[in-house]
Image (tube, rainbow, N blue to C red; front, side, top):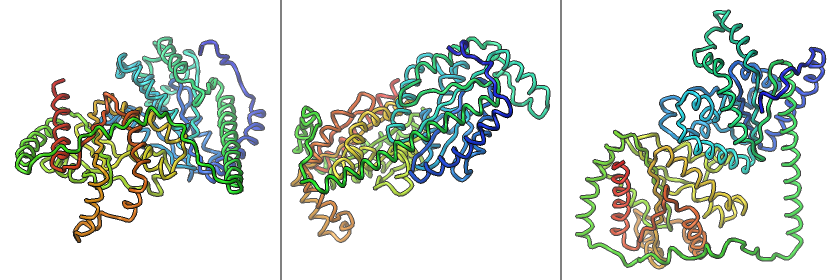
Length: 506
């Protein structure tokens, strides 16, 4: 594919000036419009060594307001980055709504340079491609503009540029042994790049190949590509917002008709009703089991650190379901330097400017550490779904997005467990009243907790669907029978201990 491109394309100086005089103001205007409309933009530059990624990024940003973009140079992973899933460092460099992030090399390094240098094993390739495509699909589905640009030159041109760089002390450092090796084995590296282009050229994130032998031609083409894509996005967003306004106006005039639930009724099978809420322990049984399990978790926590195994634990459940008590007993004997508990509240202003999974990726543990989420990313398919904080399309696609995120964590070596703390409605009412009557616990009960009880059936249906769609071998759901707090706490501890012991056998 790449070898068939016409790399002789050029653009004369006068023609170039004429084109850029039109393109640069347009791009600056589009940046302002995207900011006003809250459109986030990611521009990824890939291509051969010495193809001019740095030069073309410098040319591109001349038309942009520097207050609205950031450039990320992607090199070999740092020690910190190696202790996370490979996409973590790109989630943490994600632009907020209305801003632009430009990447000098990107997440494709995993399947290009790292593959060529054998840092990415053959056995890891399929999963890496799957993760990349899922990453791009969920970002673009959420409104991200993703522009992928591949700069191509041939072997002869690359060698000529290397020679020129090496002739000057000021630029010789830019050509290393690895660059020379890729030039010597240009055909092999070209095949790797062609495979990457074919496997990741998608409808939602297509590649834009730029013939980069002539720098003026490349610059003008990049400007034209970026200008076209942003202009299309601005038009689409404006049209969608006008359509939304018309829909709201029409609904205001028409009598309200209950929306028909199109979700698969097979998902309504109640996993929750299967839970035996009569399970319990006596106080003596509880104390005996708790002591033994906490000693085990204390020892295993140290082994996790030594073996560099990350652990992600998510807790969901009914209000007053016992999440806090279970987390407290789980962590009581753990080294506080090796774990963190994140209580998840409604997203703040900054978090709302990003993809809903962004704030959770920011808090994922590095290798050897434990992160516990008191409420999780599953809010998307529960409270946000029921309270109308996201659209039907958004919460329906979230099941796949969440499964993909948890798969990435598991593929990076993490133990991922998710607990649903199950109690019945009567037990919840009893606990609510007990909190109200206890001055030290009144802060735990709010008017919102009582209001949520009125939607118990809706939540139960959403939870059952969530459990069915997102319980996987690599990130299972554990329903914890929680009417008896002693039983619930022991089941959580036993589950975590068993999962860690099983992993340590590997």
